[in-house]
Length: 465
Image (spheres, rainbow, N blue to C red):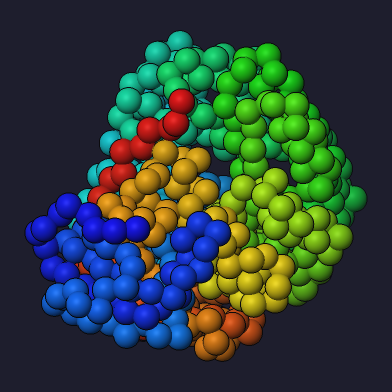
């Protein structure tokens, strides 16, 4: 702890809060100067333009959500979160940095994936953002561009092992070629792990049998669909010696395979998502079950407990939202046939507060582990540390003040997402965000949005080697 070197910019002193710094929780002061954290410690004599009394509040690093889908074209529709509505929801939910996926369009270059998102964000983004390019055309032209996008600050590239009809499926031999090229460039390959052949066999069979309700989405993609894909990824990772990341892990079997691989020294790690820790497949039995159709599907209570244990002990490194916000009309594409429902749950705003409530307040994880899964680990693993994800001198002043005692009801009328429905309707939450700072600017004050659209900046990322 101590003072930084910047002397310019507005000074804001946050006094007397409980700061979460690594494994330590310390009641002390934090000084913001300009866009950075300038000092941490007893600062009763410090001069400041604004003084904020944080007694009784937690002072936390701004959330980092590395898995969101803005302006996402998928299954006959487009997600309703753009760079204004999506980052507005992020800000109200304590998230000050997001990374969005950008699919390579038919005939388009890989570098265009970055250009498209930077254009979409211009004049709209309220918080800082990065981009994950998504390869859909694994030809030599695309492979030669991998090094270019890595140098441009997008070292994490995603591929899908399913969704043939949407033009996203990448076969295993191409995954190997991509992994080799990406590893050589200093990047990490992110994978949507579901075995496509099994899905393409199961879906038409269930439809033919008249099993079309939302619960059959889960039956079409049993846990073995995920574990088989993860087994193949581990084999590829051993062959290529690349760096791999499994998105939205939902199956205990998958976690077991990954645990063994990580113990063997394979460079692979998983995330899970908020909805897998909060909901089970029972939601798909409801009349409005289309709300909870996502991929991989929700699993049973036993699987959920295994995922929570993986989060608590660190085998699951972080928890993202996988925000995929489609309108209610679009979700109703699947009311009579589950296979026509756009897969995804809007969750960018609930993530931070509901993980505190269900995780810390209910004793499933420590406060320090909570900060790791929502901020510090995603920032570190995705090449944004030390500027993002922690309360340290010299870091960006992305700071959240949270009242750990306030209770409230989450739902459509208490959230700020652009969807006209909520999967989190009626959930009782302990812990309420009071203020959110992004690079030293107060952008959310309780229910008031103060940040101006377009203030968010592109985050140029570089992975540790």
